[in-house]
Length: 329
Image (tube, rainbow, N blue to C red):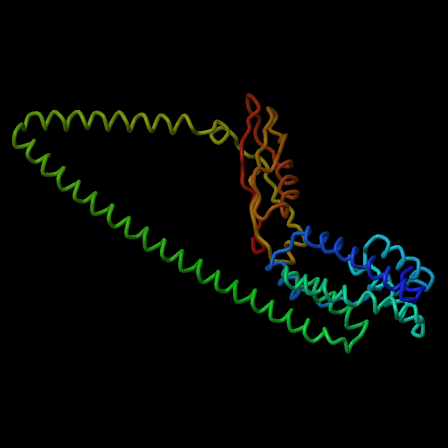
């Protein structure tokens, strides 16, 4: 264990071990994804946790000594939270306040914890920086680095907030610029279309003046073409209509049960369900195609659809229906 020897030679070896461990811990921390926005939300959304985890405080002195030694051997000097040498020694000091070896171990660990906290601030991992600052404060509330570290966290958080505001303002300005550009393009397009229409009208007038008979023939041909196109569109619309929508006649469509949690929260939504109506009119193979919000009303919508009954049909028919949920409905 780190704290059981106090000789200069042993302190030097311990310092080298801690330096190597600090490098490994720092690499592990850098590999964890953390953005500025996530750090800011984490630091403001939850109340700060105690410096030493409750599970660590509940351990006995012998357990704490063994856990602290193991943490040092595995380069867990100050992280992860709840399983690091710093917390184990702090809890051990609470139980054995006069133990010189524990005090020596905390003294050795302190500078590396400070460096780790500064690195967390630089990476804008404010939740981790505040956790480490809490460890430093519990180890030595009069530590010279503590006020500077607290101020660095505060300054960095303010800088992130200001940067976010600047980015939002820039994004808004860019959106407004794009909107203006789009409006200008639309105006130019409308003007070009109007000019093209004017020229076309002049050409058509000249054509009418030159050949009234041809123009009449063209109008008649255009009318026939429009009539044919309309007939084609109507035929396509009839063909696109699902047989299920024309032939299915419901007998019983009980409303779905409203999920209690969603009802208490005042949530509303809808679920698009695809299902097959068998020849006897019963519903099979019901499945959710789309739900808003997701997974809130899915189960009750499927349960309700499976209870639906329709008049018997010649052959199974697959169709879709939207099941709506409204607290006031």
